[in-house]
Each structure stands twice: as C-alpha cells, then as structure tokens.
Amino acid sequence: MDQRDEQEFAEYFVARREAVRRTAYLLCGDWHRADDFAQTAFVALHRRWRKIRDKQALDAYVRRSVVRAVIDESRRPWRREKFTDEMPESPATDNEIGETVATREALMKGLRRVPPRQRAVLVLRFLEGLDVTATAEALKCSEGTVKSQTARGLAALREALGDTIDDLRPAS
Image 1 (cartoon, rainbow, N blue to C red):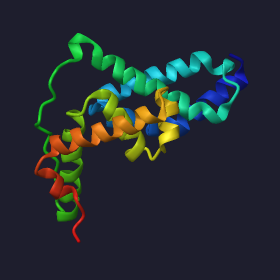
Image 2 (cartoon, one colour; image 1 turned 45 degrees about the horizontal axis):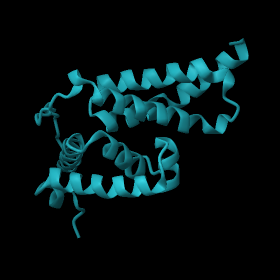
Image 3 (cartoon, one colour; image 1 turned 90 degrees about the horizontal axis):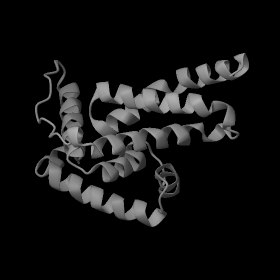
Image 4 (cartoon, one colour; image 1 turned 180 degrees about the horizontal axis):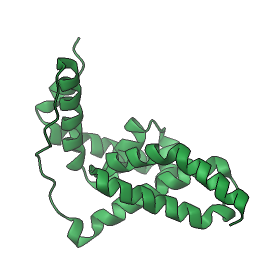
C-alpha cells in the first residue's frame, strides 16, 4: 500500500473503531472477544483496501466481516460454552443509572441465549438500525431470511427474557 492508502485506512480505522467494537460486543457479549473480532475485521479490510473501489461500502464490508467472524467462532467446538448469568457488580449511585444498567444487563443476558445467526439479525436490525435490505446485504442472505430470522430471534429473546421483559418496557 502506498502512503495515501495507509493514511485513508488509518483515518477510517480511527473513525469507525469504536462502532465496530460495539457491534462485535453486541454480537458476542464479551469485550475481549469483541476486540478480537473487530481486529479481525480491520485486518481483513486492510488486506483488501486497494481492491475496494466503493469506499461508501466500507461499513458494510467491516460489519459483514464481524458478523461472519462471530458466527464462525460460535460454531467451533471449544466455543460452545455456556455463558454465565453472573455479571460483575457495577456501582450504581443514581437510581436511574441503576435501572439502565439492569435493563442493559437483562438484554445482554437474553441476547446471549439467542442463536448466533438470529442474534446477528437482531443486533443489526434493532441495535445498529439497519433496515431489512441492508441487513440482508450485510449477512449475504435474502430479505425473507432476515424477516424469518428476526421473528425467530425475537421469539427466542422473549423466551430467554421471560418475566424480565416486563421490566424492559418503558413505564406508561
């Protein structure tokens, strides 16, 4: 890569690093693994940087790389571990902050129980704000698959949350 390409890549990396890391965390539920997945995606992007003609598609390329890495990793036998339901204690001095933390904690616990492909669809659709078409492009599948995986994923999330789902709804 020449100097200009390196500079463009560095600027993109700095601008998007945290967003990619956050997406990876939402998909896997572990900040350390999220760092690894984000790094994997950026390394893949760096390798192909000169070949990418449409720089507007960079976010989609990186997002797809992260989703694939998380799903591939979940299929490996040593990764078929069960997540613990215990979360580290977080000091919540303000009641509102405590409720936000509890809500986020419950959502993350529920997401960990949703199968990886369905979790990917839920994260991309509802937490990343992609529409059905963009999600289908990111996952390289049909829009119908996104819709069915969304329905199944929401059902699995509702089941995983159980009674907790009422706590997640905003007060009327």
